Length: 600
Image 1 (cartoon, one colour):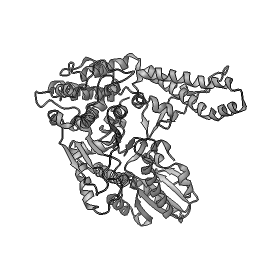
Image 2: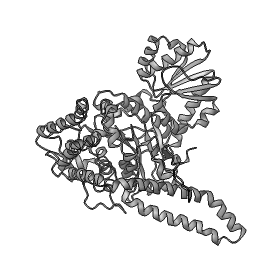
Image 3: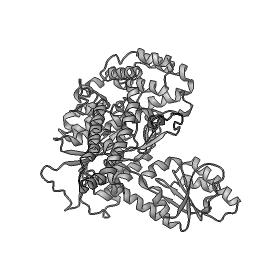
């Protein structure tokens, strides 16, 4: 039981349990002992739904990673392939099946496509001559995966690229399907708002699916009051900026994948006194990060500059609790102290881990390089010299800094200037190609197509108007005791979250002009509820909004929404859903062609 999923306003464990039930049913279809062959990308998301113990209960004895050649030997009756519907994976599966047939093993093969079956893939298996070898070909609809008590993600990494570069709307269909599943479990969402072309598509598909399933709806009291669909391209600036919350910085520096982070091991080595530290571990330290850990839930969304104080306060509380043992005199008191020990020891080890992580991050955030980079970002956000070649970017290219760092800054300058003058753009492109290699011309082309790096078409730059109207820059943001969402970027309030905030109060009508300057339509739809299912709101009861980011969301934006949920007078609680959890680096990487041939 993932208890932390049920603490929030909406019990997301219901969704996880529904996914587990379907998985069990499929495994039981394949009677006898089983080996699962995994498409490696799926192991992370699946880990959030089902641990190995659940698979073991259903006679899964072995697990392998899908790779070409022969399958490792396993004394099992069934071999099940868990794969995404990708053609290149079908070729590997065909090779695996052929090598098994050659060795005359009498095994049953099954395929489980995640999240949808694909005719093209089945056609490819047919061409390879192995389609007939499969007893079950099924799909496992894993759209929205609960990551935390208020966070769902589809982990669909190519969604932004597909929508904006390839004009492929598959991810939008999966999104609409995922939202229908959500409504089947949590009731129809009465109000839908949206901004952007993709948002419009998703809303249209949802309304169409609702008409198709008319009459089969569950009579459930709606848990969500509102759904807000936001296109990532409405706010291209936020993911490019360096996140400054604790969780955001962990993701920027080390990368959080499916709720886990891998860290350099030397900081976590337990050194005994008097021992030489020659045997330092070489395996990265893997830690799970979610709100099930009390301390992490407390500090994850703080600005990093406020984390040190929070950790030292916690250290004092823990050491005071351990001191209590000297005061325990009677048997009853000693017994009570002993019963609290496991919790106290867990808290102490959690504190040690986060102190080590904070030290690792501090080494980076206090460096000159980090400060210089941040200064330039903040200059762009406040509109300083965005229309000419930036000397810091020139220096970084000359020093051959990582290409992604350069691309983030150049794209940021372009977004804050509503495109770059042709002369400036050409200069940057030339410098990048001459320094990093001409193969990156494809990447630059992709960034242009996605609207991140583009020539200025009109002489008017709308960004300053948007910045002023929506108060996107707040001088002297309070990082220790924040009173506004701008603390997550130390001054910059994410545009996407400002739109969410204004929608709740006073409503989008108050910013019609700005909405017109941002790409894509904005709209409102209402879904009819069956009679008797209208929510009677208690005095002082908060409304619940599901904010769905199409194309990715950053941890800093999530922190800003959590901040809004906790505000005394907001009257609104937010649940966050997205196609993918991203940061500037992973987002730009998804738009690169051949990122593996990247310069270090």
